[in-house]
Length: 296
Image (tube, rainbow, N blue to C red; front, top):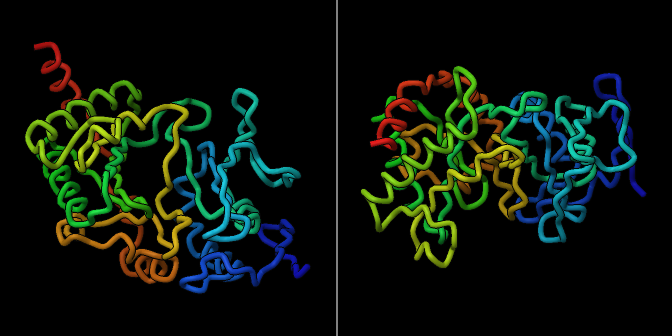
């Protein structure tokens, strides 16, 4: 077995099969992937640290079998931080050492919980925009209209590609809000948009009831749920990466497949972390408004 040892942050990490092909189409081997993780670590860890991690492992690379893993793999090195909930030993992905250890195990996707370890509160407000069909222009049109609606409500949000077929709209929070408050806000926005653009949007969870429309998922944002982290790679043939966008890119119908492990480094050097640069939002006024509308 081909193997080597890395020393990171004072920890020794065994790397096995460094030449294993993880993404055949772009030609990304495990050794290449680990180098990319080092590059992504300052950004990816920002959104995973302090959350409970759900990892998606592809032991034989993209195209092979994959599985979700919530319990920390055994044996677990001492440097890996654990947050145990209801008997599940979740990983708190808070260090480069842990990131590279997981990368060596074939973890190609990192999905942190919406709620933070300890207080159970959401770290941000997220809307998941899910196309029933992979029709890219309609997806970006939908994202643009959602952005306009949020702007009209006085909310500055950041769109990001999921790295798969959808996009997410992320609003950093200036103060704590409950999942219930944010769900009521998402419900208001989702019903408003599906009423205004009934041929484009729906809030129907059942896929068969969507009839090709774009689903505004405000229900997924809940305690115990998780979503693809900003800057996580995805187990897709193109090695796509979940990437924050500008609204101009959304209006220009950006191609989600253009943001990959091979391109994300240059983008971060040019643009930095668009999500980290966004101003946290105070939602008090809009929550008060929607509560009054609900009572009327």
